[in-house]
Length: 295
Image (cartoon, rainbow, N blue to C red; front, top):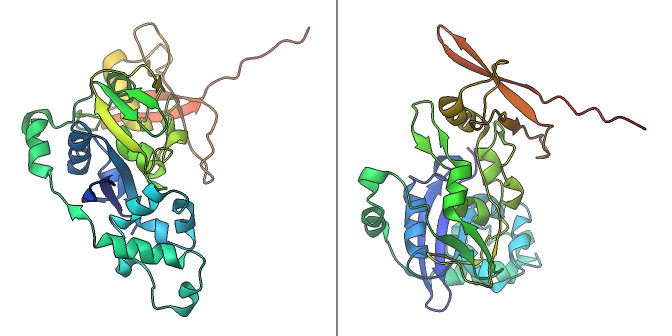
């Protein structure tokens, strides 16, 4: 079946939360997704703690990784209930984190739940734009980091087979509880992608603003799937004499990577285009390693 996620924005002080079914990560992590535009809308109004909560946090002892900070425990309580835990199992009752699970289940009933779907859709003029806005800065108040959203969009935008421009949104990637981003990049990624940052902002207090506060450090972020990005560059810049896709008009080649089962990166690869009667075929080949002379 695969892991199912919930998009969770929550205000700890007012005990208010907004939670939506976000399905499998790679189905609802895009700029046109209802879960994404609802969270973006909220973050443009005021700060919220954000957790793209997956169902796998209750598998084995995974939940122990989210019991170190109060804001994370409360984040889990926005979408987990007694139904998700084997509360009556004698072995489970003996677990060191059982009281935390009880707290999660009890607090699940205490949230004031809001629905901003319609307001968010209107705010972003979704029927015409089919996207959230990529302007301003995504702030992490917990860590004093920021991402330039326009720059993120420029690096991460891609094309579907139907030539529709898309982008994997940064919020679900940075705030997921685990396993989601790598499913979105299952086939591989552009070499510029920063998938190692996935989940590092889970449960943190975020906000989207127009002006960058002085005390915040801008960090570089990019998430682009291998073939969608290749398609985007091919349509814009074509290929060189070797049929390798270019990434700009200066002749630089697009490079990509694959991931191992352990989520380790492969060496860099070029994408080669083969135009056939039935359509365009894409294939990769290794980037030649530089030969270093020894004096």
